Amino acid sequence: MERIGKDGPVASVESRLKALLLQGLEGEASAYQSFLEELGAYLRGFFRKKLFGRPDEVEDLVQETLLAIHSQRHTYRSGQPLTAWVHAIARYKLADLLRSHYGRERLHDPLDDEMQLFAINDIDAADAKRDLQALLDTLPQRQRALIVHMRLEGLSVRETSRLTGVSESAVKVGVHRALKTLAARIKGET
Image: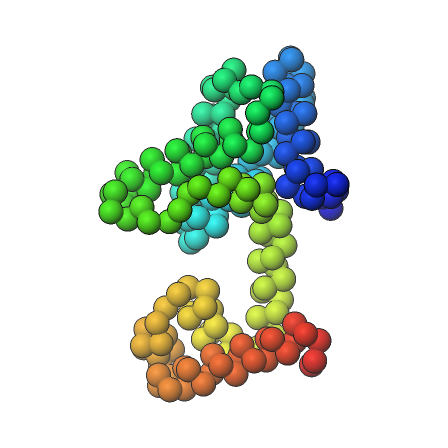
């Protein structure tokens, strides 16, 4: 469990990673290795949020970003926030990937929130996914499939109807009932 500092969890992560990086820059190989491993978990969480449904691209991007951070580590100034420096490198790597795969016209997602970088890590994402799966497993199979298709995969009512063989009106009703059931379970009402 992450220790929450006086300025909150992001400040705690910032200070821990900054200390590891500075120790690594002074020649402590184990501290630098820990820095890269921990930063990799945060980068995975950050890129998964940006590249939902593209796990191979996420891992490639994490590795490219870590390599760029490693090769540019001499440019980091200890008086500057680590978050801003890492975010700038991650943002450029993400923009390069999106530009190369999708062209300039598809770059509409803002990439400027540097506080997001340390807000979600790979471990938190895995825990959330496990919790979501456990919650979905409480639903009947038909309702679960409707929620997965419409809310997690982003399919339309029409696409979900075609895929499941259920009428469009039944899809709408099923999703509504499933969401109502899930909300009640989250609140502890059932």
